[in-house]
Length: 361
Image 1 (cartoon, rainbow, N blue to C red):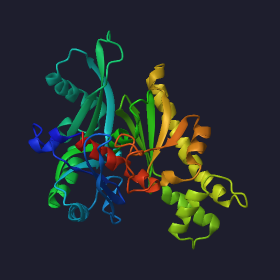
Image 2: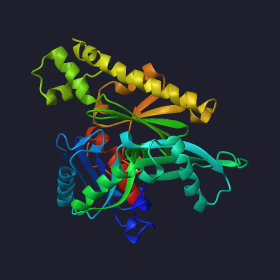
Image 3: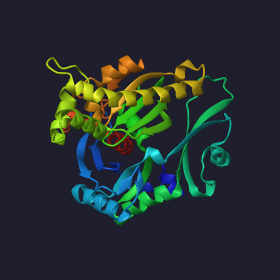
């Protein structure tokens, strides 16, 4: 997270309640909580605001004024003052490095700055970066692994200035997949986890180990491509609402009377599956013989993750247990709280939930 990028030392307001804002190319989702503990935490407010076409493209802000207008609408709906904002993983540079275990914290940032040139194709003077020291696996280890996330200063400044134009004060910026991980990965889950954010226009991939995001990638295929495949198979006159219904009720499951929906969707899903396998193979090749870093679970998020039969399809074809996320996993127990967002729509709120949780700890 980046409170320190914009403030030399964290200001006192950083601990005040703030709203989590998940900004994508097509929508802004927001959520905030009352309370700070499981058992006492409840949803305060939430919402989804459409972002007009052309305002953002692959996470790059094309029209700062229009983005500010969307943010101003969010402020009008919520009365928010402080916000925690997602940053697009398409614009992030992630790398992992090692430092001596006894390196003083005050020296770590300087040492990591020297390693930016080896891993980030932007001059260090034009980069904001943050880092996380991974927990030590063995007390005898003489080094520590450090995960570094970097963005071009211009990227963060654009989002920051849009917030200010909307009279919102951003207290932190965070890669969307890291926020998502905070929301959906159970504390007791071990090994590496692949997060798949199956959205409307693209599919984001994050690999998390020891609660730290170490890898991201993006596939330029999402729910819109599934709708296009259905229209080609079933007729161009099908409304999006009807197509969504077919995806969520028939999906990848062979129908009793017809397999037309399955047949239309499976070719597109096969492309996504192959891309997931490629990323997984790369990750396992990179991590070598370290069994603890092998991907044990795939967790699905995003509105298009509602596709019927998707977890079973990926479990079978990829060979890794796949489940849909419980976005409330680390927020509250469903035995005690009934959220106002139904399960199907909640899958699109994972990133916003993760951001808001950071405000309520």
